[in-house]
Image 1 (cartoon, rainbow, N blue to C red):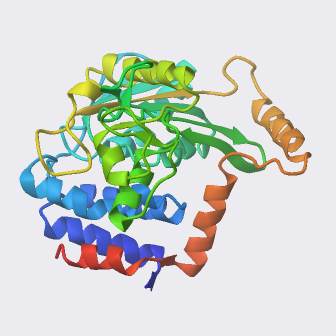
Image 2: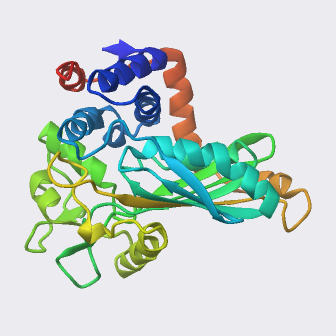
Length: 330
């Protein structure tokens, strides 16, 4: 079926509220999932709704929770997600952190006791739209082994980055440190289709095309040993420095069983002119123009924004099984 973004947000928000989620949190979650779907990231979009709702029903996520913030240091915004959804905590960071950055030149938000961070490009982009450079790190339940091992230790531990560009859309980078995001494997498992044999390993450490076996095994790190090393870096920043649960201690985001995942996120935001005084965004525009001069080069972040603009005009086309699963939650 086809549905407008506004109607999709209302539908998803009402589903969460019907299942006992706070109204503010429901709207925050709905907006994030719909925007993810519109950006072409269906593995982080509306296919997550049934799992999220089941987790609320079992108490794995506290649907009534809202985040709390404090300022332990001048450049630090500490946010406790209170074992609720990540999106209200991310909204709070987007609301509060820019003012601190303008005071300090650089500041960070340390978010703990959180949940699935979703499409992080959508978060860092919101800082770029306010004229700031932003980096975000998040850990996730263990899905990748340390290099040379077979036991899941790190999450896919994504990194996102955005920088504003004078007179144009920001440059936005969002990548999981596994070869592909685990949400793609989850989606393949839901659709009962195979995956490429270089995405993941089964429990014995063998490459697999079976999405179900991949979810029980480990994801292949992007870039081999380098990707595994970066996953460790993100684990330290997102969990070690925020007080959140380490990936190997966290329960799954893909089912309703076990305790709250209690994951962590770190956002570092920078005033682009803090060191130079002025003109940085114009220099970024020059760099972007130089990149775009060569045929075949695609500026990072532009595809997702283009898809969202199209969805805003023509709505979302959702698969029947997705809508059936959502409607069944009423």
